[in-house]
Image (tube, rainbow, N blue to C red):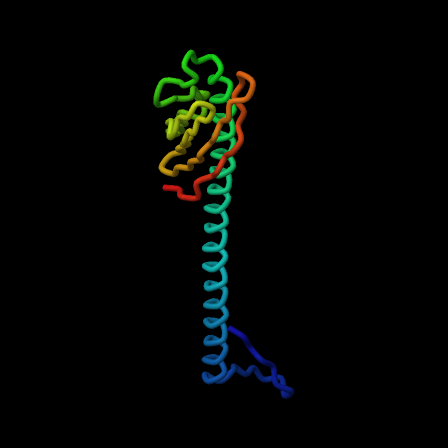
Length: 152
């Protein structure tokens, strides 16, 4: 307990009213600290979620790019300028462990134009893009890639 010394050297204790005010001030400060800690925890948790989502988005973009390039390399080898449906892409074991899959399906076929939808799925989220290949001089060239903004 706090003790105060008066000028006449006698011990004096703070009045109950002053002790009550000090206790209330202390409790209010502890409440403010608790609110600040809770707000920081919520903020850090949201940041961790955004970081994980950004990592998955970057990984999905890389997978979609890989699939588009791999698909373009497969096209000239096909006898009828198309490939079996749907196209499944082989991925490293480190990626397939969490349910990552990449596949392509043909959307449209014309004499000199092929259109495919490439879909990448990581865990429960998915991304897709539509890729258009144009035939020039017996080779296929990617002329358009449109990212589908819908994810699931």
